[in-house]
Image 1: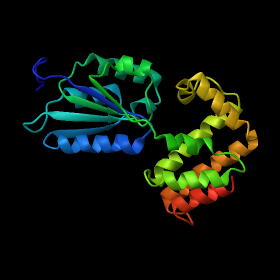
Image 2 (image 1 turned 90 degrees about the horizontal axis):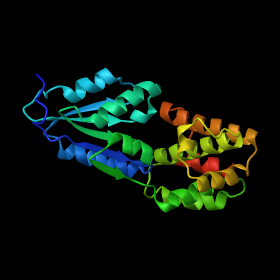
Image 3 (image 1 turned 135 degrees about the vertical axis):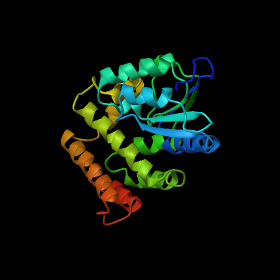
Image 4 (image 1 turned 90 degrees about the vertical axis):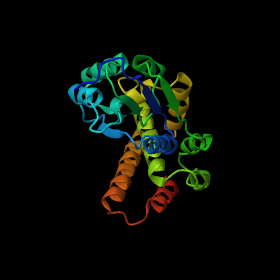
Length: 241
């Protein structure tokens, strides 16, 4: 039986940003704080509006209320379905608390549409940008030094995710694909200019090879086929860049 509207204080909290370690830590802290509630986890890449409504509008199995954690909704394939779910979330016509976690930083436009009660953004440390900007041919000593510092605070799985994302952007810019992609749409003009300058250090062919090499490293690590651990694989990648 659905609880009557107005009986519960609605709450929509958004956790986002490219500092995945920090944002994940915040999410885990919330789970621990809310452990007396029934927690429902939803993968935004796989759900539809009906599933979302059922989770947010159904009563908890227990006496305590339910909390719904929705991850990576903006990775959904259908933009039409995404728009429907965003409008529903913003309406707050549901009786359960919603925690919205996104692996990337959301734009001001996205945040305005969602109308959250609380927004927590976790931005990468400055060393992350220094490291990613250092990725260019003949710059291995600096990149390796920055990698060593970066791995003191971030897991290698997070680092390779950031490297793959950076080279994807470089490849798109080098191939003159400047529209139609969410990642590029989020960038300010000065960021595009800096990335274009970095992309010009490579040929299109070399960027394609590097991107596929990174995907292979990532896949081999996840499937247990790698010859070295991920940290060593990253070091070898930088030495041969």
